[in-house]
Image (cartoon, rainbow, N blue to C red; front, side, top):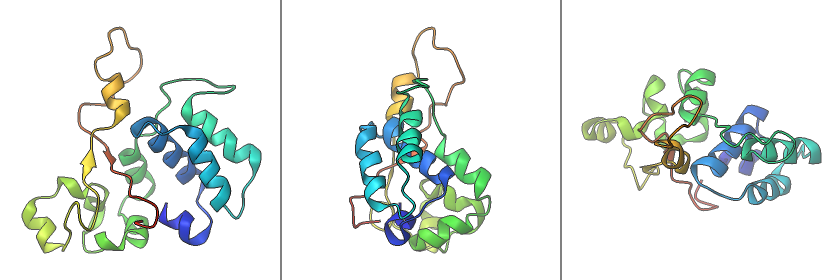
Length: 160
């Protein structure tokens, strides 16, 4: 989100990840995200933007309700050593390698060594709404997304 706010651009994969995170993990109305992206993107395209958001939210012409991008998996797959994370999250710059993808899993000693204070420098992890809603649904089809939260709190605008 910092990349979008500072440059007016974000990769399509990033856009889909954000849309999934905001709608599924945080329960935010997809239209708010689509409107915000519309106001920020320098390469804004009505069809691409609103299409991504309806796709991620599970509404529109492809209404699969449980479409979900696992943000941690996406981050590890597309940024295995965390260079992109450290570029846009300078408060995590001292965390080496792939550990940057989940700083809330580091020990207190490691957080201190890497000069990161969760809840101050970087948001504390939270339990995803998607996981809460889909964790123990009887007869639910599809893969399990596990019990552990994969999301983070979303900082207020200007706090990116």
